[in-house]
Structures are given as C-alpha cells and as structure tokens.
Length: 88
Length: 443
Image (cartoon, rainbow over all chains, first blue to last red; front, side, top):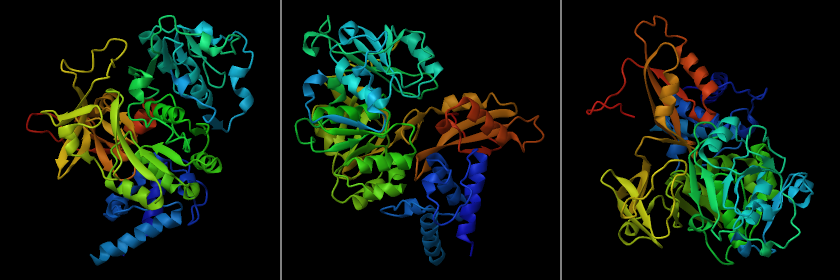
C-alpha cells in the first residue's frame, strides 16, 4: 500500500516549489495548514494534485466535509479514505 | 439616505489605531462634507474609515467610486480615464501616490449634517468595480436601494455582530457593510493585511456572530483553528455556487446558525436569498418569481431576471444591461433537477476561483506571448476547495525540439503578468486541443 503521508508531504513540497511558496521549516502533524506556507490556492492545488496521484478526493466523498486544521488531521482524512478505497 | 438608518447601536470595531480616524482631525487641506456636495468622489481609504465615510457621503456626493484597499497604479489610471472624477478622498492610511486626480482628506464640518444636501437632490450613485485590481476594471453604478434588495430590514438583525472579511470596496464586502448599517448591527473590521488566523481570532475576540463569505472562503474559515470558537447565528454565502457539501459542513459545525445563500450578480445588481440549506433554488420560483424578481431560463440555458426597480448600466461606454422587456441575462447557466434549479457555471466559460472571475481568453492571450507556444486552451478544472482551478492545455510549436522547459516558462510568465488566482494551477502539454463539432475549442 502507498504511504499516504509520504505522498502528501512530497506533493506539498513540489507544489510549494512550483508556485514559489516558502514552507515553514518543520512540517509535522501539529503544523497548522493555513500557516504552513501553502496559501489557500496552494491548498486547493494540493487536493487536486493528490486526486491525481491517489485517485480520490475525500472532500468530494464526504457528505459533510470536515476541513482539517493541522497537517496531522489532513493526513488522517486521507488515510481513512485510502483504507475505504482499498476495501472498495 | 443611509444616515437615516443609523442609530447609536451601529458601530465599527477595528484593530487599527482609532486616532487615525481622520474625520475627527483637522486634516490639512481636508474638505468638509458641504464641499463634497454634488461632487464625483473616489473613496480610497482603510476599510474602517471607508465604512464610516460611506454613511456620511450618501445623499451628499453625486457619485462615489469605492476604491479597493490595494488598488494599483493601473487601476487608478483606468478609472481616471473612464470616469470624470473631481477628487480622491483618503484617510492617509493607503497608498494614494498614483492618482493624478487631486487627493484630499475629510474634516469635520461646522454646519450640522442635516443642513447639507446634494444640490440636485439626487440619490448618490455608488460605483463598484467588478474585476481584479489589475486588468480592466468594469465600473457598475448602483443605488443603495438596488444594493439592499435582499437585505432584511427592521430590527431583526440588530442583535448581530457582523464580521467583515472582504474589502468593503468590493461588491461582496459592500453588501455586508450595508447589511450591518441597515440592521444597526455591530461591524467588526480586521485590517486586510492581518494573517488569516489573526483575522478570525479578532472576530472571535469581538463577539462576531454573523459572517458572509464565498463558499471557498467558508472552507478556509472552517480550516482555521480559531473558527472552532466562533459562535455563529447567521451564515451567508455568495459570489460562487454554493454546493450541498459546503452547506452541510456549515450546518454541522454551526448547528444554531441560520444559513442563507445569496445569488447576486454585480452586473445585474439584483439577487435573491435561499434559506432552506439546499443547493440551488426552488423550481416554483421560476414560475411564480420571488419577492419582486421574475425569472426565466433563456434558450441558451442561462438564468434571466427581471425586476421593476432596476436602473443599472455600465459606465464609460456601455449599453443598458436589460433588454427591451426589462430582462437581464445573468450569463449563469442553470439546470432543473427535480424540484430545484441548480447553477452550473458561466455561459462565457468564465472560471470562478473562490469568487474571482477569470476569463479564459485573457489568460490564453498572455500564454501566447511565451515563445514556443503554438496553441493554447484555458479552462476551469473543478476543485472541491476553491470551486475551480485554472488549467492550461498547450500545443508546443512544431519547431520547438526541447519542450522540457516550456511548462516552467509559461508559469513564470503568467506569474509576472497576471494576479495569482489567474495563473494556471495546471499546465499540460498536449498534441492537439480538444475541438468540438462546431470547430470551437472545448473548455
């Protein structure tokens, strides 16, 4: 199984580089997404990019989407849906 | 006149130094309200003063152009060409260097407010710009009457404390301001240059319980940690298509809030509000209308509106917006689904990025400036976060042997010449563009 966390971190770094965004030095589970250096457009690109690499968009799949505050919460959402995808 | 609506209950709370409220100071070279009577004014100042001065100027000035906080030189130049401005009114808290029109301050008048009136007794025209601070701003004239069509009147809203996350010089922000003024509510105005989290913290600290935002901005608000302490009673969405998912998320996070999504077209200057927390609007409105707005779907599938109070037109060389029978084509594609009418995007292919409109042809023209680009098509790619993102499909020039740097050059060029929301998020090289049966590029 793909390591969702790795895919996400790699994607964040690539999008930051492509869009001249400066990431906060230490990305960890407690990093607040809105303060990570990705702006809201960058975050939207990240979700679209992950749909390309992971094959799903949890924010479309949730009837009542929960929007993450920290990187840990964001990864958690993807891990949860990744398991559901694997079972489906 | 707006002033008549304002009682002691209305107040503006801001994080900037109250002493900078220039109206109370003896501004050197400042004008009094009576000197502004019948004049054509551009109002360019910090949002908290803009809100206060809007109330003062309504019914006094002949017209007031609301200038976005961060307006650039190109903006000033273009509106100066289009409009016959008498002066720019400022509080000294924004950069007004690039105006060629005389820049003045405001100072207290010795006469009472009531004794000053517009010589023509005309309603003040409120001029709002529709596009970004770069690019060509389109100026639309409104009256307070036309802008408050969907605003609840009376004392019902006076208990609320509205937060202002938009520039009040923009259509969406100005609507929030008018809403707060007319309801005599409190208005919390964080400075536009604060970090987003700090803005939300400022709203929380000042008891904000009513907020208006685009669906994309709502998603961002839901991501802010301080938002978990917001105790909202009124939630308003506008400026973008409100999908069922964002409505559901808001209903879950703020169970005691009333949720209203508003359809309002800057061009049309009309709108209506939907309060049942369902996407789109009821089909019955198409047949019977809602309030004094009649509706129909055009042959092209766009929503057309008609109302009796309408008198909008583009300024600086534009035709009347309505047809001979008074119908205004909103340009928004709609589709009937069961007992609802759902919005499907813009007929002209314009892409709505979090409430900002992108015309594909504008971006295409810029991309064609890059050496090595043969053909290009720009279209919207649906986004669960921003509504849509800009995608560019590029056919490289046949003589270009090495295409490896082309994507990068296109992105770099776009970043230099376009505001960030117009820069394609995705640039893909293709062999040919998707072309429809009529020979037009499919978007």
